Length: 90
Image 1 (cartoon, rainbow, N blue to C red):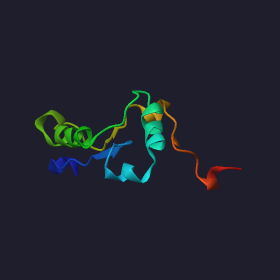
Image 2: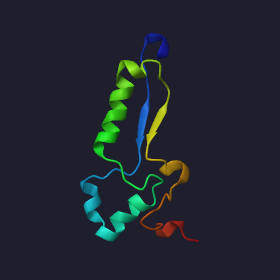
Image 3: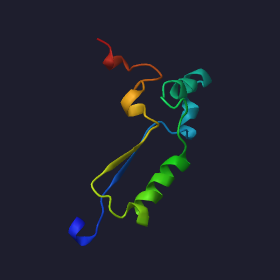
Image 4: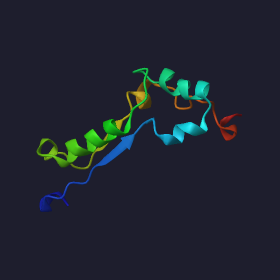
């Protein structure tokens, strides 16, 4: 698609504070931020701004990429901050 000036990219969000957080008790929600290397959760604005970047002239030479917006969670954080699912336990 690149020869046709069509860029294909993906935004991979990490833990983003949304109304979905309401299903966790308050102490459970706190573990999301504590387990992140930046010690916070993202918000919808973080994800939106990465999309705007990719769609703007600043991202005009980016294609075939996955932009991970997770505060470093993928590399250094705990992937199961609220506890591991039962199927993960041996």
